[in-house]
Amino acid sequence: MSSAFSLGIDFGTTNTVVALAGADGPAHLAKFPAPEGELFAFRSCLSFHAPPARPSDRVVAAGPWAIETYIEDPAETRFIQSFKSFAASESFSETRILNRRYRFEDLLSAFLLKVRDYAGSELADLPSRVIVGRPVTFAGAAPSEPLALSRYETAFARMGFSEILYAYEPVGAAFFFARTLDRDATVLVGDFGGGTSDFSIIRFERHDGEIASTPLGRSGVGVAGDAFDYRIIDRLVSPALGKGSNYASYGKVLPIPNRYYTAFARWDQLALMRASRDMREIRSLLREAVEPEKIARLIETLDENYGYQLYRAVSRLKEALSAQETAEFRFRAGSIDIGREVARSEFEGWIAPELAQIEAAVDRALADADLAPGEIDRVFLTGGSSLVPAVRAIFHRRFAAERIETGAELESIASGLALMGRERDLGRWTMRPTSEAS
View 1 (cartoon, helix red, strand yellow):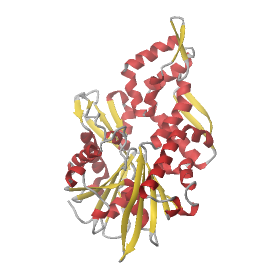
View 2 (cartoon, rainbow, N blue to C red):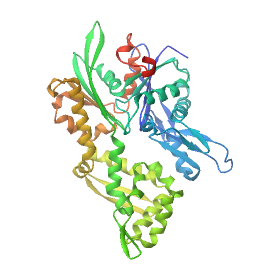
View 3 (cartoon, helix red, strand yellow):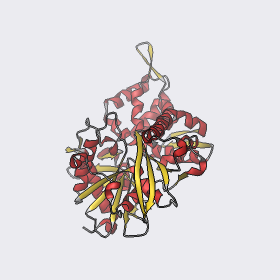
View 4 (cartoon, rainbow, N blue to C red):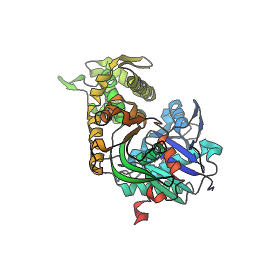
């Protein structure tokens, strides 16, 4: 292991980014020669594939390679994404994949080892210390922070790190942003990922050429971009696949069960329905449905594994509505063609419940710091969902426009974590697991 540079890892719900920083200069992002071209934002997903000719084999892939494997052979591939959302869940003890049990830390370590392998020479000589980003509030109904950090600890230790430090993800972004400050400032950072939206308020002051920080307040909520995606699917796609329609049974007209459509919250889960009891029920509904053409579309979507195409269509719409007032949603796959114009105001109405939760979290961060909006000097918004205009509007209602900055949506946290490693007193920025600190 090397000590010539510091390493920061932003393990995110949707993407993972790795940054390295030397003694001076900006941080450098690890690059991955993916099938569709070089990238630095590595999708946080895994695939476990059993080739039909060698069913006892277990081929593990991650990131874009996992997606490629899953699309090519979904029937023989177990695909897992967004597994960070289970890190703090006491109810998640393990999952069974191709007749082998995997705990959360097993999934995470398998993922991290593949990240290192795909990066090649860039991560061949790792330092002994790593700074890992963590959310302010872990996802889940009753998240256990000590459990999540102990699971992280096990997984990162398997990579060979002897010193594993943790920093709040928005604090990493704040450190990245603080380098641009030309005066002392109180900064509110909002980090919007796939699974969580996190906020930190930090006072930055310069002393003897170094940046000193004082944490003032923080808050977080377990909703972000993934929840926005599901709202789009629920409004635009699920009705065309039968949601809200009816079927006839023993002379009665009954509603199609809504539970068939909950799997659309996670596109990778759609393939799992094909061998489920629900799928057998869906097939039988084709004969009894009042609108059988809609159920036929649902069956085709599940049988032909159109989940990834659907995810891409949703992402394109969300990105387009961030730049323009109206955009066309179009989902084409096989015989299915679903499309219509969507106004940004309509989309904002769909995600109003999530926006309200995010807005409340911002207010909690201010209350935790005992500060009024006028006492915040700068606001830095980062993460993919920070590009959604309705999310930005939450901050424009509270802070003057000239105080708000956005940028480095995918790289700020990992870069800030790596740059943080240069500090002489890392204790001002980082923490150790609860069990170790006590």
